[in-house]
Length: 295
Image 1 (spheres, rainbow, N blue to C red):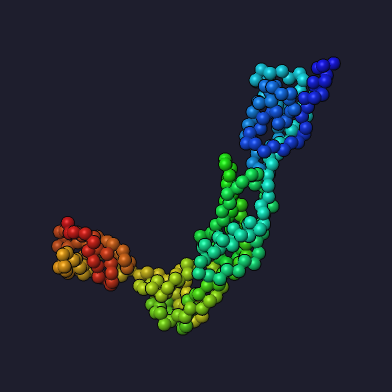
Image 2 (tube, rainbow, N blue to C red):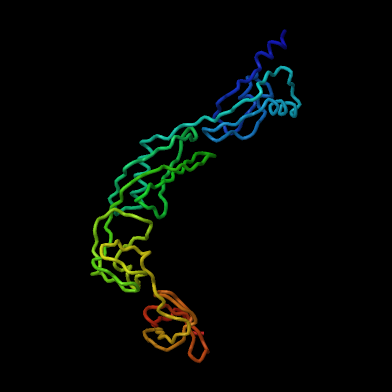
Protein backbone atom coordinates (compact mmCIF):
# COMPACT_ATOMS: atom_id res chain seq x y z
CA UNK A 1 0.00 0.00 0.00
CA UNK A 2 2.87 2.42 0.83
CA UNK A 3 4.53 1.77 -2.52
CA UNK A 4 1.25 2.48 -4.27
CA UNK A 5 0.88 5.78 -2.44
CA UNK A 6 4.45 6.80 -3.38
CA UNK A 7 3.85 5.93 -7.01
CA UNK A 8 0.78 8.14 -7.02
CA UNK A 9 2.69 11.02 -5.51
CA UNK A 10 5.87 10.86 -7.61
CA UNK A 11 4.29 11.69 -10.93
CA UNK A 12 5.31 14.22 -13.58
CA UNK A 13 3.07 16.60 -15.54
CA UNK A 14 3.26 16.70 -19.33
CA UNK A 15 4.33 20.36 -19.39
CA UNK A 16 6.07 22.65 -16.87
CA UNK A 17 7.60 26.14 -16.76
CA UNK A 18 10.94 26.93 -15.15
CA UNK A 19 13.08 30.02 -14.65
CA UNK A 20 16.55 28.49 -14.16
CA UNK A 21 19.59 27.99 -16.40
CA UNK A 22 19.55 24.20 -15.94
CA UNK A 23 16.78 21.62 -15.74
CA UNK A 24 16.72 19.50 -12.57
CA UNK A 25 14.67 16.34 -12.28
CA UNK A 26 13.11 17.84 -9.17
CA UNK A 27 11.52 20.54 -11.35
CA UNK A 28 9.64 17.81 -13.22
CA UNK A 29 8.89 15.30 -10.49
CA UNK A 30 7.67 16.37 -7.05
CA UNK A 31 10.17 14.49 -4.86
CA UNK A 32 9.96 14.66 -1.07
CA UNK A 33 12.49 16.87 0.70
CA UNK A 34 15.99 15.40 0.77
CA UNK A 35 15.45 12.95 -2.09
CA UNK A 36 18.79 12.89 -4.01
CA UNK A 37 16.98 12.32 -7.31
CA UNK A 38 15.62 15.86 -7.21
CA UNK A 39 19.11 17.32 -7.83
CA UNK A 40 19.86 15.22 -10.92
CA UNK A 41 20.68 17.60 -13.81
CA UNK A 42 19.02 17.05 -17.17
CA UNK A 43 21.16 19.66 -18.93
CA UNK A 44 20.83 23.28 -19.98
CA UNK A 45 17.42 24.90 -19.91
CA UNK A 46 15.98 26.25 -23.17
CA UNK A 47 16.26 29.92 -23.99
CA UNK A 48 13.52 32.17 -22.54
CA UNK A 49 10.25 31.69 -24.36
CA UNK A 50 11.35 28.37 -25.85
CA UNK A 51 10.78 24.76 -24.80
CA UNK A 52 12.64 21.47 -24.60
CA UNK A 53 11.04 18.02 -24.60
CA UNK A 54 12.29 15.15 -22.44
CA UNK A 55 11.16 11.59 -23.17
CA UNK A 56 10.21 9.11 -20.47
CA UNK A 57 13.20 6.99 -21.41
CA UNK A 58 15.60 9.95 -20.99
CA UNK A 59 14.36 10.56 -17.46
CA UNK A 60 14.53 6.86 -16.55
CA UNK A 61 18.06 6.60 -17.96
CA UNK A 62 19.21 9.58 -15.90
CA UNK A 63 17.95 8.02 -12.64
CA UNK A 64 19.23 4.54 -13.57
CA UNK A 65 22.72 5.86 -14.42
CA UNK A 66 22.87 7.57 -11.03
CA UNK A 67 22.11 4.23 -9.34
CA UNK A 68 18.94 5.52 -7.71
CA UNK A 69 15.54 3.77 -7.42
CA UNK A 70 12.94 3.93 -10.19
CA UNK A 71 10.06 1.83 -8.86
CA UNK A 72 8.13 4.73 -7.31
CA UNK A 73 8.25 7.00 -10.40
CA UNK A 74 5.24 7.44 -12.64
CA UNK A 75 6.28 9.31 -15.78
CA UNK A 76 4.42 10.32 -18.96
CA UNK A 77 5.79 9.44 -22.39
CA UNK A 78 7.25 12.94 -22.67
CA UNK A 79 7.51 16.17 -20.67
CA UNK A 80 7.75 19.65 -22.25
CA UNK A 81 9.90 22.05 -20.22
CA UNK A 82 9.38 25.70 -21.11
CA UNK A 83 11.54 28.60 -19.96
CA UNK A 84 9.68 31.52 -18.47
CA UNK A 85 10.04 34.80 -20.33
CA UNK A 86 8.83 38.37 -20.47
CA UNK A 87 7.81 40.48 -23.44
CA UNK A 88 9.34 43.76 -24.59
CA UNK A 89 7.67 46.94 -23.39
CA UNK A 90 6.62 48.90 -26.48
CA UNK A 91 7.14 52.30 -24.80
CA UNK A 92 10.68 51.34 -23.77
CA UNK A 93 11.45 50.05 -27.28
CA UNK A 94 10.15 53.30 -28.81
CA UNK A 95 12.42 55.36 -26.54
CA UNK A 96 15.45 53.21 -27.40
CA UNK A 97 14.76 53.45 -31.14
CA UNK A 98 14.35 57.23 -30.96
CA UNK A 99 17.62 57.53 -29.05
CA UNK A 100 19.45 55.36 -31.60
CA UNK A 101 18.32 57.64 -34.45
CA UNK A 102 19.31 60.75 -32.49
CA UNK A 103 22.81 59.38 -31.86
CA UNK A 104 23.41 58.40 -35.49
CA UNK A 105 21.87 61.56 -36.99
CA UNK A 106 22.55 64.32 -34.43
CA UNK A 107 22.19 67.11 -37.00
CA UNK A 108 18.99 65.81 -38.62
CA UNK A 109 15.26 66.23 -38.08
CA UNK A 110 14.03 62.65 -37.47
CA UNK A 111 10.34 61.70 -37.57
CA UNK A 112 9.57 58.12 -36.53
CA UNK A 113 6.54 56.95 -38.50
CA UNK A 114 6.13 53.42 -37.12
CA UNK A 115 7.80 50.95 -34.77
CA UNK A 116 6.81 47.27 -34.88
CA UNK A 117 7.73 45.86 -31.46
CA UNK A 118 8.18 42.11 -32.05
CA UNK A 119 6.27 39.61 -29.94
CA UNK A 120 9.29 37.75 -28.56
CA UNK A 121 10.15 36.35 -25.16
CA UNK A 122 13.30 37.52 -23.40
CA UNK A 123 14.83 36.61 -20.05
CA UNK A 124 13.00 37.54 -16.88
CA UNK A 125 14.48 39.89 -14.31
CA UNK A 126 16.55 43.04 -14.85
CA UNK A 127 17.81 43.50 -18.42
CA UNK A 128 20.33 45.77 -20.13
CA UNK A 129 18.98 46.76 -23.55
CA UNK A 130 20.71 48.97 -26.11
CA UNK A 131 19.61 49.90 -29.63
CA UNK A 132 21.69 50.55 -32.73
CA UNK A 133 21.07 51.30 -36.41
CA UNK A 134 22.79 49.75 -39.43
CA UNK A 135 25.95 51.61 -40.39
CA UNK A 136 24.45 52.97 -43.60
CA UNK A 137 20.64 52.74 -43.44
CA UNK A 138 18.39 53.65 -46.36
CA UNK A 139 15.58 55.76 -44.85
CA UNK A 140 13.45 55.31 -47.98
CA UNK A 141 12.86 51.68 -46.88
CA UNK A 142 12.10 50.12 -43.47
CA UNK A 143 15.10 50.18 -41.14
CA UNK A 144 15.67 47.25 -38.81
CA UNK A 145 16.98 48.60 -35.52
CA UNK A 146 18.99 46.05 -33.53
CA UNK A 147 18.17 45.64 -29.84
CA UNK A 148 20.95 43.96 -27.86
CA UNK A 149 19.30 42.35 -24.84
CA UNK A 150 21.62 41.21 -22.03
CA UNK A 151 21.50 39.95 -18.48
CA UNK A 152 23.71 37.70 -16.41
CA UNK A 153 24.48 34.68 -18.59
CA UNK A 154 22.01 35.72 -21.29
CA UNK A 155 22.17 37.68 -24.52
CA UNK A 156 19.92 38.01 -27.54
CA UNK A 157 19.52 40.29 -30.54
CA UNK A 158 16.04 41.44 -31.51
CA UNK A 159 15.29 43.29 -34.75
CA UNK A 160 12.69 46.07 -34.66
CA UNK A 161 11.17 47.10 -38.00
CA UNK A 162 11.04 50.89 -38.10
CA UNK A 163 10.03 53.46 -40.68
CA UNK A 164 11.27 57.01 -40.39
CA UNK A 165 11.81 60.24 -42.29
CA UNK A 166 15.25 61.76 -41.78
CA UNK A 167 15.58 65.34 -42.96
CA UNK A 168 18.97 67.02 -43.06
CA UNK A 169 20.74 69.66 -45.15
CA UNK A 170 21.89 68.02 -48.37
CA UNK A 171 23.93 69.36 -51.31
CA UNK A 172 21.81 69.83 -54.45
CA UNK A 173 23.43 70.48 -57.83
CA UNK A 174 22.54 73.88 -59.29
CA UNK A 175 23.61 72.96 -62.85
CA UNK A 176 24.43 69.92 -64.98
CA UNK A 177 27.94 68.58 -64.34
CA UNK A 178 29.84 66.57 -66.96
CA UNK A 179 31.60 63.30 -66.18
CA UNK A 180 35.17 63.51 -64.84
CA UNK A 181 34.63 67.12 -63.80
CA UNK A 182 35.41 69.03 -60.64
CA UNK A 183 32.52 70.36 -58.57
CA UNK A 184 32.97 73.70 -56.87
CA UNK A 185 31.16 75.22 -53.90
CA UNK A 186 29.07 77.51 -56.12
CA UNK A 187 27.84 74.47 -58.12
CA UNK A 188 25.73 73.29 -55.18
CA UNK A 189 23.15 74.62 -52.73
CA UNK A 190 22.20 73.10 -49.39
CA UNK A 191 18.54 72.24 -48.78
CA UNK A 192 16.74 70.45 -45.96
CA UNK A 193 15.48 67.25 -47.60
CA UNK A 194 14.59 63.66 -46.66
CA UNK A 195 17.55 61.32 -46.95
CA UNK A 196 17.35 58.43 -49.42
CA UNK A 197 19.66 55.61 -50.41
CA UNK A 198 22.81 54.20 -48.85
CA UNK A 199 25.25 56.76 -50.26
CA UNK A 200 27.81 58.49 -48.07
CA UNK A 201 26.46 62.01 -47.82
CA UNK A 202 28.69 64.98 -48.45
CA UNK A 203 29.47 66.64 -45.14
CA UNK A 204 31.00 69.89 -46.42
CA UNK A 205 32.34 71.52 -49.55
CA UNK A 206 35.84 70.72 -48.29
CA UNK A 207 35.07 67.07 -49.10
CA UNK A 208 35.04 68.02 -52.80
CA UNK A 209 38.75 68.89 -52.87
CA UNK A 210 40.55 66.75 -55.44
CA UNK A 211 37.38 64.80 -56.36
CA UNK A 212 35.89 64.27 -59.84
CA UNK A 213 32.46 63.08 -60.98
CA UNK A 214 32.11 59.43 -62.04
CA UNK A 215 29.35 60.19 -64.59
CA UNK A 216 27.28 63.12 -65.88
CA UNK A 217 25.13 64.55 -63.08
CA UNK A 218 21.96 66.54 -63.83
CA UNK A 219 20.89 69.65 -61.98
CA UNK A 220 18.69 68.88 -58.98
CA UNK A 221 20.48 65.66 -58.03
CA UNK A 222 21.59 65.13 -54.43
CA UNK A 223 25.37 64.94 -54.45
CA UNK A 224 26.76 61.98 -52.49
CA UNK A 225 30.33 60.79 -52.15
CA UNK A 226 29.65 57.58 -54.08
CA UNK A 227 29.14 59.77 -57.21
CA UNK A 228 32.72 61.04 -56.93
CA UNK A 229 36.19 59.57 -57.18
CA UNK A 230 39.70 60.67 -56.32
CA UNK A 231 41.88 60.58 -59.45
CA UNK A 232 45.46 59.42 -59.44
CA UNK A 233 47.59 62.54 -59.53
CA UNK A 234 50.90 60.70 -59.38
CA UNK A 235 51.66 57.67 -61.55
CA UNK A 236 54.39 55.09 -61.14
CA UNK A 237 57.56 56.32 -62.79
CA UNK A 238 56.52 59.99 -62.82
CA UNK A 239 59.17 62.61 -62.22
CA UNK A 240 57.86 64.45 -59.16
CA UNK A 241 58.95 67.46 -57.14
CA UNK A 242 59.75 66.58 -53.52
CA UNK A 243 60.14 69.27 -50.85
CA UNK A 244 61.99 68.61 -47.60
CA UNK A 245 62.28 71.03 -44.67
CA UNK A 246 64.81 70.74 -41.85
CA UNK A 247 65.58 73.43 -39.29
CA UNK A 248 64.01 76.20 -41.33
CA UNK A 249 65.85 75.20 -44.51
CA UNK A 250 63.77 73.88 -47.43
CA UNK A 251 65.32 71.77 -50.16
CA UNK A 252 63.51 70.82 -53.37
CA UNK A 253 64.53 67.95 -55.61
CA UNK A 254 63.13 66.13 -58.63
CA UNK A 255 62.70 62.43 -57.89
CA UNK A 256 60.88 59.42 -59.36
CA UNK A 257 57.67 57.90 -57.93
CA UNK A 258 57.89 54.19 -57.26
CA UNK A 259 54.08 53.81 -57.20
CA UNK A 260 50.89 55.63 -58.12
CA UNK A 261 49.06 57.71 -55.51
CA UNK A 262 46.01 59.84 -54.80
CA UNK A 263 46.01 63.15 -52.97
CA UNK A 264 47.22 62.77 -49.38
CA UNK A 265 48.75 59.31 -49.81
CA UNK A 266 52.36 58.57 -48.88
CA UNK A 267 54.62 56.72 -51.31
CA UNK A 268 58.31 55.92 -51.76
CA UNK A 269 60.26 58.11 -54.18
CA UNK A 270 63.83 57.61 -55.42
CA UNK A 271 66.53 59.77 -56.89
CA UNK A 272 66.54 59.85 -60.67
CA UNK A 273 69.89 58.10 -60.60
CA UNK A 274 68.28 55.26 -58.61
CA UNK A 275 70.50 55.74 -55.58
CA UNK A 276 68.59 56.66 -52.42
CA UNK A 277 64.92 56.71 -51.46
CA UNK A 278 62.59 58.52 -49.12
CA UNK A 279 58.89 58.53 -48.21
CA UNK A 280 56.82 61.50 -49.29
CA UNK A 281 53.17 62.57 -49.07
CA UNK A 282 51.27 63.79 -52.13
CA UNK A 283 50.10 67.40 -51.68
CA UNK A 284 49.30 68.28 -55.31
CA UNK A 285 49.78 67.16 -58.91
CA UNK A 286 53.28 65.65 -58.89
CA UNK A 287 54.05 67.67 -55.75
CA UNK A 288 55.13 65.82 -52.59
CA UNK A 289 56.50 66.62 -49.15
CA UNK A 290 59.14 64.34 -47.63
CA UNK A 291 58.05 62.55 -44.46
CA UNK A 292 61.38 60.96 -43.50
CA UNK A 293 65.08 61.32 -44.13
CA UNK A 294 66.56 60.06 -47.38
CA UNK A 295 68.22 56.65 -47.47
